[in-house]
Image (tube, rainbow over all chains, first blue to last red; front, top):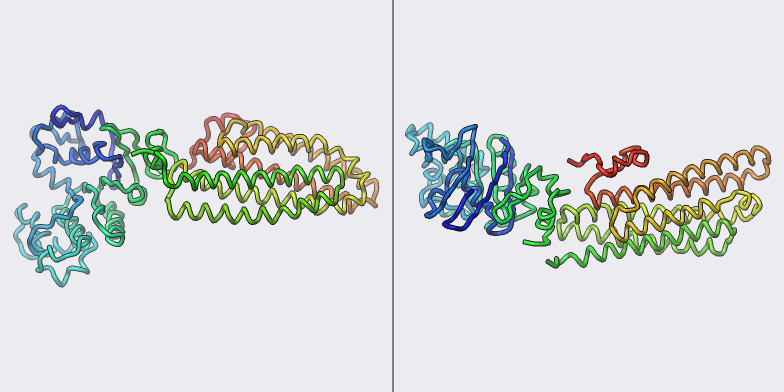
Length: 241
Length: 234
């Protein structure tokens, strides 16, 4: 359960998120899907007045245990936001930032990490000749993929994405979607999206949230062809929300 | 909430009903014309085929447009997918009615043989079958599904019986072979119409319940299959 002050934002959510698959969280605005996403790397801890109860287990370990190192947790559970937020530094430094604060200073090692992260994020070919130019000069779609590279550079197991393509044009969106498809081979991905068709295209599992509760969770192909709950059916067919 | 493509879905339903109406008229009309060896009525049925073909194309195009512009999911997706199939099934049923009508001229040459085969029971049952098919299409329900499968099975059995009678008759009188063969072909066309009606009933199960029951034999003999069907789309 999660409260913002006296307002309950999440109520008794129980779900097993499968490894190396893409899980999409869908639901109308204010239904708790982003809040739920942020419980998975304890980003809500930073919000004043938040009260959280319950258990979130990653690899069998409750991440809300007192002895959990939140910095390590967020290394393991990376996050990409709606608005791309590169640091006002070079492309290289953006990706090298995480490994560097984790104590990697060897130049060759850093170069390897930066290159492989940029390759995995499908942006290497576009930036390999301008690694030392400012990241702020990249297009919106490139900046978003750079942010994904930055998240991958610290070698996470899980990548959380909060509306990663909602501010992008259709071509950049399709690149991000292709990338998600590739990334799931190595990472578990949880994505919040308002775009129903995007959820249907990229995810293996879909969770439908409504008024802070999980209404239905299941394989995306079932949710989008024959959902079992009427509320899910009404939402995905645009009858409410 | 009123959705912008609700009118398109209603239009699709309306066109399917119109198509079903014309095809049912063709089927009932062709059987009546057959019983009465009414060549004039048969021509009218053949002419209606143009209307059916035109409507067939219109329904296909409308489905294509809804798919392309609205990316339907869940119940909408199932309805539009099924509308395409039902449209196809209805068009084929119309073709079989025309097939029956086309043979009436030849059959009229031997009215005694035609009237010696009592088609009344089949015509009556086909009437009931068509009525139930139109009802499930109009109501988008599965209420008459078992009635449809039962009727289909009874008609099929009657056709078998009549076919045997005609073969016996042919072995006795070789001069009726041409007419009798045509009558056998008409019975085959009726059998096909019945089979397409079953397809439409199965499509309606998919629309309403989201379960694929086609090929789930024997649906008619085991009611549990339709009340708790296999979830083979999962």
